[in-house]
Length: 245
Image 1 (cartoon, rainbow, N blue to C red):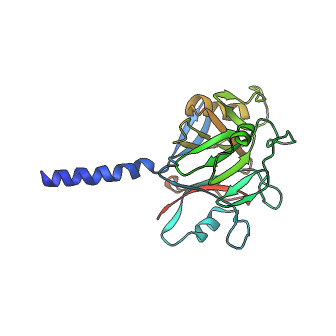
Image 2 (tube, one colour):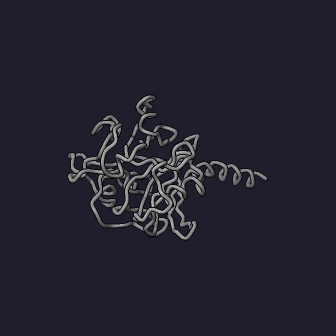
Image 3 (cartoon, rainbow, N blue to C red):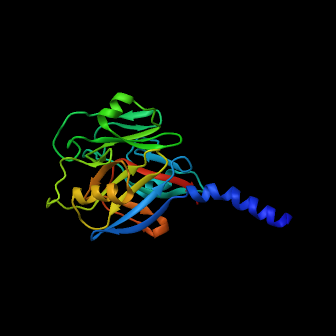
């Protein structure tokens, strides 16, 4: 009986950690393929990365791993927002006590300025996608934040500018969050698709009330559990989970 009790206590202690682990899986919906990585922000070390200690842009997943202490590595990562030619972020970006750029609230050319756009905000025990004007009004205390655009889903509705018959197709990636902030769903498409198709996946399958577009064409994923780490274009902001090796 004592041995059973000890085994039960050990498993019970481990369950929260197991529940909090990053899980990545491939999913299909209406003829399109997606890879979805789910993170519990309250249990996982979810961060944003941009520059190293010398102020140089990291830009690649291996470069981040090289900056981490021995015994730690990325268990998940993806590009997390648009950037200029020098790979500095477009719009507002926060990493701890450091900020770059400013919150951009006006319309502009390109996907970033296709209003409404939004901000992905990571706090101590939760992560949320905010529409930019709501973020500006509430000013949540984010440990990490990255502005991008357009919003994919706003309060359960698709972005009003998305067209079902659009011909613009790219590999795309983004993030959606649950209403309670306890699940962040990071998604990359495995084939080219439209904004309407991508947003519909968040709304209809993942059922995240708010979701934000990170980028297209340059979209990349690091998911060791799937034996996947995409290489290619140098990146600006990157989101990732740090875990023991």
